[in-house]
Figure 1 (tube, rainbow, N blue to C red):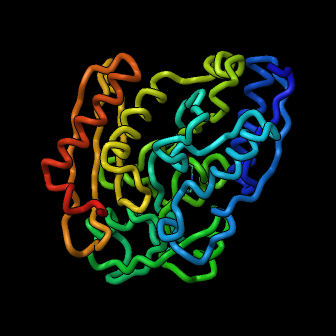
Figure 2 (cartoon, rainbow, N blue to C red):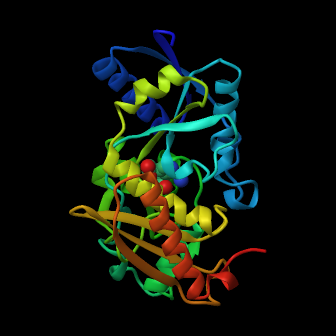
Length: 308
Ligand SMILES: NCc1[nH]cc(CCC(=O)O)c1CC(=O)O
């Protein structure tokens, strides 16, 4: 392994914060020097259309993977929730770091909670997962698309385009914007998506020295929880155009995994929801739990909710 590592990162403020966080941990905990290679991805350039319609979350990681493949960088830092369920051949997630707050946040200049919103209020979100859950809480709301990085989304709120918006608490906290959060959704009223709040470190699968080094940064409870969450999505076809939430919490030594699936045609069908708790001791056990939850969703009728 080279003693100096290049970290490929997107250039949004959040992505840079995350890359710098990993850079500091490499230095402090592993004694490794790292520099950042900023890149603009197609996902960052597409601001006018719903991401799921133009190729999905993978658009945020492809350019970074190309930099790894070509040896321009050795490590890519991602918000785990933006990482597709199946990595391309030749790449692996070397570590998942300890999760920040996984909840979604209600952000508004005029209203303290979603229940305070007036009848028919306009809420900004382009996440089908958030849209389906918001409408199941408050069927009267009008949800309008909202894209862009966190600063852009907050600006669009402040310009008056929306009564409120919904964002991941983790991103706001990382950027020192926690004061914008009016309230946190309870995990059970707005179930997070797989991997929300966690960072994933992606490398080339053949970089065995780096695999071994980065394993020391992994947070096993987070890694197992996220593996279970991602396995639900993978078992259901793994597309990000799917309004799927999956979140696992430790209860002592067992893991409680909850999942909710909405219908892309939001008004047509109710949310499907299930949860299973099981003892989980390793990654295979975590995947098995995720598959069990996916099976339960299928038994509840998920087939009719999935594309194809
Ligand atoms: N989809 C974009 C994205 N990717 C990661 C985060 C926040 C940080 C995280 O959840 O780890 C966000 C912003 C958001 O969803 O509000």
